[in-house]
Length: 310
Length: 266
Image (cartoon, rainbow over all chains, first blue to last red):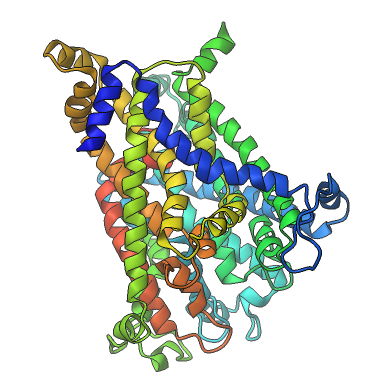
């Protein structure tokens, strides 16, 4: 293999960091380049659907519009925030409970865990599709049983009802991602040292005390990590909402990604759309750097931590 | 015992929605639209040939396979040597570069896809699988770098030293000693890359519209406000998801590590 010979030569000549070059070039060309172009577009009035809007420089006009007169953007922003905090909290509670259940009561949790993982490994677009079928107002299996038990009336179509649709989407996300929280926390539980628990039992601590004073503090880094990862992912939510409601009814499920999609690819207002896209990126970048610090604090292998300590 | 019963109840709750779509894919139109949900019915196999052969959805499966395979191969080829460098060498700006890789993995597709769409339009690459392959490679290459760095770091440095003593060069050590040792990790990483690419929707949806459509892109078009043919839609969903469930069984051991960017070892 030719590539192998190149890799070998590079390493033998002691210029190993050269091996980073291909991946970095790829990311710069496909990702960073377009990204910088988008930032530039944010300063122009580029619009594919209106005449005479071919990308003249407009300074911070788009940013002003976002800050001052775009209530729908801020509606989307807060909707997304509510979604993120809601689902992450519920997923964490369910996920932790389930992990503890598996950890304490099931010896062979491997097989059960694999079954549990099914929802989170499905393509999100398929997850949306499955629930669209289940929640259909006419023949949805779920709707049928909700009506059967008197939890919904005959007319209610859950996805068409502005006050029910958001909780429904959040529940679907909980269904999909609770297994992930369980998986990570269970891995954390299995990796905990035995000694603190033995000591606590010797001291006569009750199970609940052990959980509160030993398990939870030891699990804290893992918990922080899983919350952050879920938070970042939930913030980017697009696929499920896109197929379930497309942002509707009205704008009641128009979360940030959906809104940005609409501005760019329905209205073709690319200048303003770039600013919206940039805002989404900014929030994720901030969460990302928090995640990075958390991981490194967790593993203690980083130079940054070392520098901060010295 | 109560706990086991609870667990079984939870399992049923988690799996029923998926089982329902599998069942739907074997139902006739009449059975799907029945007033009360039908749990027992005479299965039909007509939905699968209708959608994949008559309505020509088979090429979408092929596209998905092409995109997922090539983006996986590209990501591994680019990412594995980089991961090795991160695990074994020190150089200025190393951790900053590592963070850059993380941000590319985490970047919200919606904020990247717009300019990416413009770039590929200029290059004349829209509606070609290569556009989606490159897009998916951008997030998968970072996953490879993050995961494989951990796997290489797990191999003790003494192994490198022993290999060098045996007369291997540095390059030989990497290719003929470390890489085989990291092979299980490499395989798990590859499967995970494949899954992520196969499941991805937004990049593919924007970048390919007609000939190059992947399976996930083909799904929303099947759902119309009135008269959705749910049996056929369900058949597409099953084909889009069953291989992934099988793959999940294969890599379950390394799943935790892969999905937490190496932060938690499963």
